[in-house]
Image (cartoon, rainbow, N blue to C red; front, side):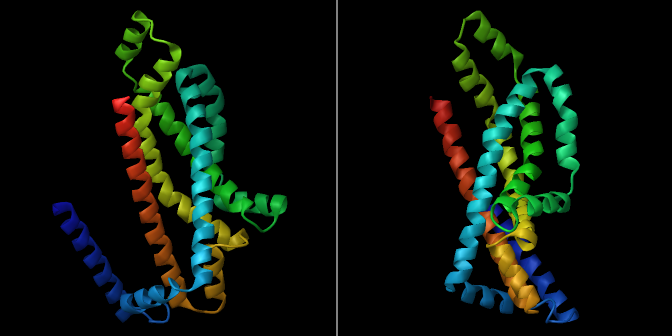
Length: 247
């Protein structure tokens, strides 16, 4: 309950600062919170906006799924071998350092306008984080557990499932925690510049129509969706962790 009130106070402070900026600056650039929220409520019953939100959401989920399916096994392999990690670390650093705009130029030439570009860019932007966090998790593993497993001749499959993956669950949760917000931002930017559909395309359309309240309302919608998806995935991971512990 106390954390709820703390969060509520933070939201009230944010709205107060927003309202103050709306009074100081031009309202056509920074609309008041009440105006933006009212416009957002209207958008939520407008089918094209709901469709755009869905189109962005499934791209975010697909990018996160690819990051987990590829990043976690790679991170596990690199964490188990310092030699392999030293070989692949420069490649990971290069991928991490390349700016989004460079990937955008590549995907536009490769695939043109469409859904592949945003998903690919989000995947590459989040992959290094997934790999490096998993490597850190593997290296922080309690060696005593591995020694006990070796002494009692625990099957390799059980070692990977119960020791490695079980110990990595907090690190997986950290990856998701950081990646969700980043995925939404990268997907929106990629849609804005190279997407064929989604909230990023709608934001571009609003900007071209000089509809700044619409831009703010769509941005707020993306923020809400990001928070909701984060909570849903955290609950899913919490249940998975609980079932893993019981098993």
